[in-house]
Image (tube, rainbow, N blue to C red; front, side, top):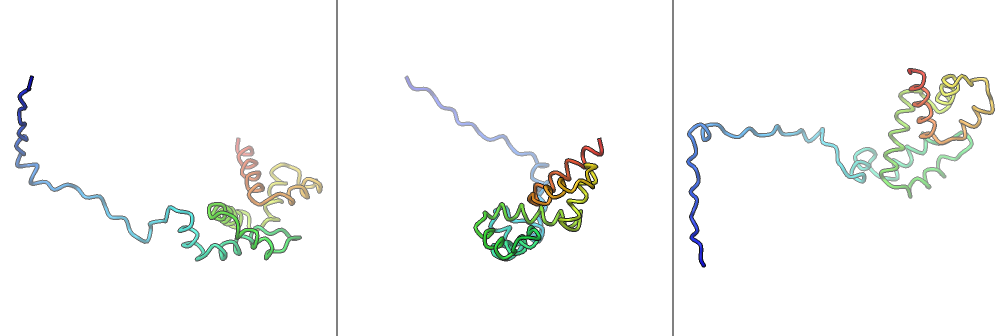
Length: 143
């Protein structure tokens, strides 16, 4: 049994719909657009992965370590990890100035600034770990 199809005619458009053009989205400036992929962000930030690894290694190195050895090991790290380490190094530099000042700030926040063993243990930790401890200590001090 066949059914009869009816053709639908489109509704006539009103005159006001034709007169108002669609609002266009504002164009984003090309200079403020940040690349989304980690490789492109590394290229934008430092030019190459090796250059970023070298700058990050200088910020992360402890007193007893060699920055060139750390830079060569960081060359094999992922781009995302290098970007995270660069962000941590920038935060520490802006907020505390140096690794030693960060350790001293943690000691003061924890009220263990005279405990040499505690400060030595803190000095052995990585910079991102120290920043996490400092952030937590500041949060506890506010509460």
